[in-house]
Length: 268
Image 1 (tube, rainbow, N blue to C red):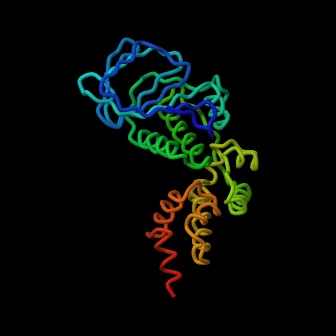
Image 2 (tube, helix red, strand yellow; image 1 turned 60 degrees about the vertical axis):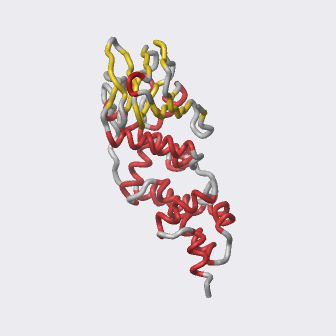
Image 3 (cartoon, rainbow, N blue to C red; image 1 turned 90 degrees about the horizontal axis):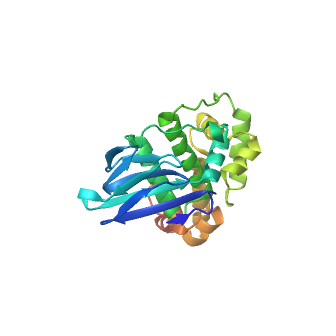
């Protein structure tokens, strides 16, 4: 279990239980849990059900529930605990009042895309992903959760033509790619809400702000590698949080590792 330093009010947990039972209890936070393997038996609202692989469990703040590993003999899952501060920031990012955030009328959700987003986000946070990546992925995942399964469903502002604002953002990302950029930095720059910013950027560019920033860093890394800079120094110079992040993104883009690329371009 750990608190993410880049997202206030978020506690995260990764567990792999073989024998454990949670007594009936409540959380002040909104609880979201995604089961990766095995499963559990849980009880809430007077109903018993199972958390099985691919399912998403959601418990509203203050909602009593209990659970145990049960007959499956193993429960491997990842969980998010969003306190009032995190939910208030999320409401602001959606242009909603915190008290207007919807509730959830059912605890177990079957939503493959939502499940995959929360697993990906949890994995990114566990390996100390970039600030912009974590904040963006959390916002997108929560937006899908609330807009698809909340009651009542929130109404979002319509995305129009935001070419001027997006042009400002792309220039800012190019000019500051080596620094740690947060979603709040971009929102303040354009005076947009964070989710509207992401949607507008995607519409105009075809990539999320984080994906665009990653491509800027990868292109810059290629230039440095061609000049003889080592992969480790290149990663730090262009803004990746470690060399493994550079390697992962570079190979996704070019099909080879930074070391293989450097060897190829400096062979002669």
